[in-house]
Length: 379
Ligand SMILES: CC(C)(COP(=O)(O)OP(=O)(O)OC[C@H]1O[C@@H](n2cnc3c(N)ncnc32)[C@H](O)[C@@H]1OP(=O)(O)O)[C@@H](O)C(=O)NCCC(=O)NCCS
Image 1 (cartoon, rainbow, N blue to C red):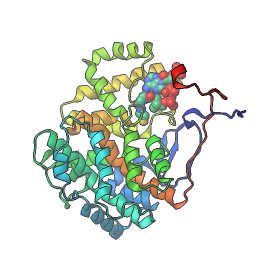
Image 2 (cartoon, rainbow, N blue to C red; image 1 turned 90 degrees about the vertical axis):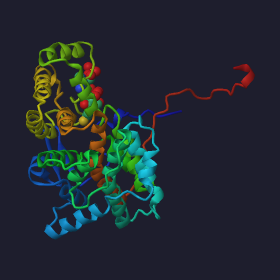
Image 3 (tube, rainbow, N blue to C red; image 1 turned 30 degrees about the vertical axis):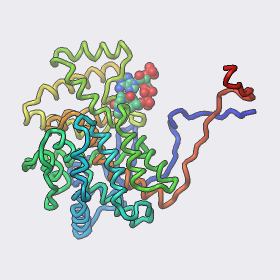
Image 4 (tube, rainbow, N blue to C red; image 1 turned 135 degrees about the vertical axis):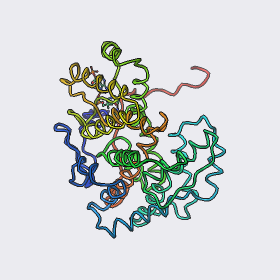
């Protein structure tokens, strides 16, 4: 009755789309955005320029960058009534649930939420990316019982977020560190959340729905939620001397160590290399050297025990220490990933729309056939 086909569980190894945005060589640990090595971008670029690059497949000239930056800054403000709306949210809600809900809600203040032509989709992407930091900062201040700090359009994306969150001027070092994190997390091939965004937009749904779905995907502990898991682990280990027994215990119990392993990378994730230097410096500057030492010790043990199986640090491993040293609360780590990845997701949505084909794979039915219907009284 049914034909059997090979099942690619988890779509492992399946090429499901073309992209001009990011390239990953998982064997050699290389990541490029539009052909530019990630390390070159994190050393020289800004998040705004990186988003321009991903959306336009080329670096901007000075006036193009300035125009894009201004467009994004003009979108920093929250729609009317949103601050009050956030003020009604339960204070114990998780920020990823809040961000997912509010990005979805932004569609309600868009007079034309379903317009998917390239220009309109890009304008929606600017709108959402521009005000998403205010959504997160406003909710965080609400739960701490603090007044909302309005966005400052004179500030960069990174500076504005930290300013709104803390209500004070962030240091240049913190702004640059945060900006680098934003660059490093912006895009990464057809990862689960990006795939989710492309699957949703492939029905010709709308940008808000696609980004809402992507945020939902990202929060899982096997994806963007792993950075929180790393921090929990670092907090659970009392001191550097306890790392060996803690990690070996986990390995013996066959538990996963958060921040290690990757479906594509079988070498150290190049983003982890960049974040490692950042984490080391920030940890020293902020009196958190022990956190970095614990991380570094974990990496050594994992290298000894599991590197032969291709299990190396991924982006989440050192981003945990970095975000902690920037002063972010643990449950804001994954929302930070989302703020950055909104740039990548939006680029993929536009890319998908430009050459769309509905995603519709098949499932292999493995249940019974010709089962007689049993009336309720006989069950
Ligand atoms: C990211 C991840 C889901 C990729 O997984 P995958 O390609 O589906 O690989 P699997 O989960 O099937 O793991 C394959 C093997 O490696 C082991 N492994 C993978 N990641 C591991 C980790 N972090 N710690 C210990 N063992 C790990 C698995 O236990 C499994 O072992 P087995 O074959 O003996 O059962 C996986 O590495 C993981 O769960 N990592 C921890 C979470 C994380 O950091 N996620 C962020 C990714 S950026």
